[in-house]
Amino acid sequence: NAGVTQTPKFRVLKTGQSMTLLCAQDMNHEYMYWYRQDPGMGLRLIHYSVGEGTTAKGEVPDGYNVSRLKKQNFLLGLESAAPSQTSVYFCASSYPKGGREETQYFGPGTRLLVL
Amino acid sequence: DAKTTQPNSMESNEEEPVHLPCNHSTISGTDYIHWYRQLPSQGPEYVIHGLTSNVNNRMASLAIAEDRKSSTLILHRATLRDAAVYYCILRPPRDNQGGKLIFGQGTELSVKP
Image 1 (cartoon, rainbow over the protein chains, first blue to last red):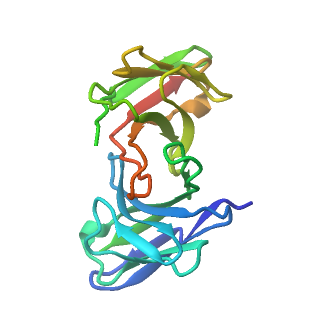
Image 2: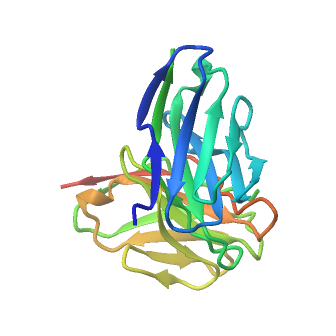
């Protein structure tokens, strides 16, 4: 199993450009998450999904949109990139085994620089 | 969300035990205590979790205070590969919020040869 993969690994955008980050998991997990991590800080949740076709806002959702059309994929979109969105983006997935004990599996991250 | 408090950084010598503390005085009776770590330039990875009893796995041990207001992650023999940021996270009871993790700033562990 590849686990959680993210595409691309690194991207440079100009202010106002748009892009989509792709997260894929091959573990048949129900839940998927997008986090961002700014230098020297912990991860913050952007959006998450508890199943195919459903999404919800996390802690810092503004400026981002997401879609979960297939169970194995979770897309994060930036419609009009801003320098404040320069960050490392991590995707994660988990399976709701018993409600409180799910382990989250993280991807390797996407480094995004917005000029 | 219940908060956790961890030291910003700790140092250890290789092959010595490491005790990473975490205070969570506002923990509720149903919160699980999870630990994740993040190696340099990688995504976080799960280490261990527990509720009330001490827990052991191949990576580490978790010691939970009797009143559950604090816990300690124990690495029995630190290696250079254990140098990472360690996050102590409280998981609230199951709700409709997808089991999200709330990350603090964690403890940056450095290991000296």
